[in-house]
Image (cartoon, rainbow, N blue to C red):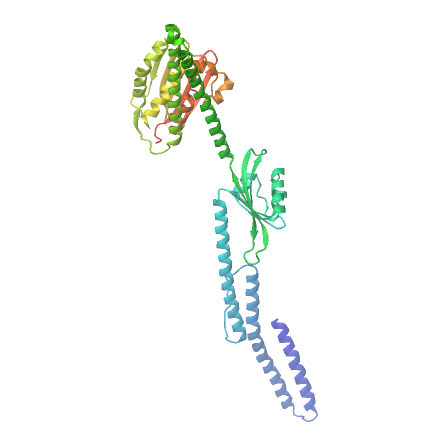
Length: 454
């Protein structure tokens, strides 16, 4: 720019001086006069050069700075050297740059906060415009819908979400253009979703500019509802069975069977057995409910494992003796203690020993072993009973699951004993494993971390 201006100035000055010189050439013969003219031309060019440079340099600086600003470098500043129009322009550009930087910083801060909020929302969120192109989507939505994050912003929603049911739902949203709540089962992902949709309205024009979809993954809730429903159905059935039996025998006795002493005693024994089974069932239901619901505030203490097992053997000896079952101890954790709730620890071990006694034929044995491995205390309850088929082991700790329902009820089982054991073990941050072979017996192995507090 400077060269162009200076060249123009020089040419114009030179032409002007030539014309002036020619005009005076006929009248002036003094060479000194002509030399003075050319000297003036030289001085004027030097002064012109400096003058043009004083104008062009600030303009060049302004041009360079504005180029940097256009590239996103908002930390640039023009050095102001004058208070003329160019200086005022430079000052205005500096102020504009500062305000632009502040505005962009504010927008970046808002975007960062929005992104943080979207990431922290436990529900999936997708927003798309009137052309069904994605405006934003959070990580939860990507995870729920199994979407890969490969430049999906700006893509059509139906190109990203590859599920026919979801396609139909989104198209329905676009057609109806209103707020809605829908339940959706995605068999592809084995998920149950509750989907909320609403149009996005511009706050100033009040025109619809798109839609927002909020996805709530209710898969776990549905599972819990199904478990609760199954539990209620099983409880109802288990309670109805002994009650029906008791009611039937009471009616039979009332109708005259009570007169026969043998029949009366037989029926009363059955009623007593069913009443005891009903009591055990109710107690187990209450125990299981308490274990599941009481997660905190449970009283714990340092419990000596071997001492507790010795006490349990004393309590349960009679049951084993009545069935001619031999109780064996192999305790190797003398003076080792675990931080636990004493009552739950006892209930866990008693349930396993009692289970072994129930399903072991007369003359068999139930053996309890303890040992320490690394930082774990291992409790093993082994019996020489009927054993469990491999296909039944995965469901063994389910509520009311029985390998042989008839035999279990006959032996007075509630179907909740092992479920209670598993919940107690998990509440103690431990694990339980099962080894069994039909006709040879079953072994339950419990791993309890010694130093973890429950």
